[in-house]
Length: 206
Image (tube, rainbow, N blue to C red; front, side, top):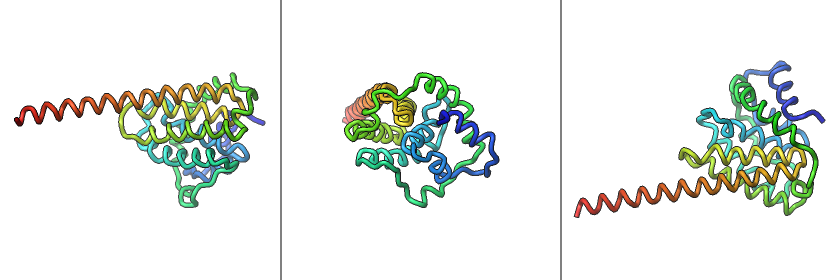
């Protein structure tokens, strides 16, 4: 089976494609590896250290729905037909892939089937699904700092699922934990700032 990076380059750069790419196209390309494939591809724009405005919330919603299906033990993802018809410019997809494929290739060099039960057993997939769900919610929060690290965690977990590599998936869980810690810290800091501002405001009024 060809590596994901090879498939993506062939599909989006070598073959003739329409000007728009739909989720249905991506699902067809994913085949039997749909969950891992979709998590990797949908997390990629937000996981890159480049601005990707407008993608974290819609892609976060899709990944949350997929993660909940993973938790429920589904082996094949389901998405509403209306979502499957949603499209994105081929040029934009190619731009993300040009930036992301080199990173993907580095990770792929480390991947091999190991500790497969983490990726294939119901308990393992449940834990991975919960982690992805939490990171998807974080990605949907419109606050700086709550997108990139969670998306990186989803990207790495998705690659572990794709390659049946429990070690890579576990590493992704570690990044997800870091993302959760960072998001929590940002929320707590924001709470303290707002609290201090309100106390100062009411103190000045008195």
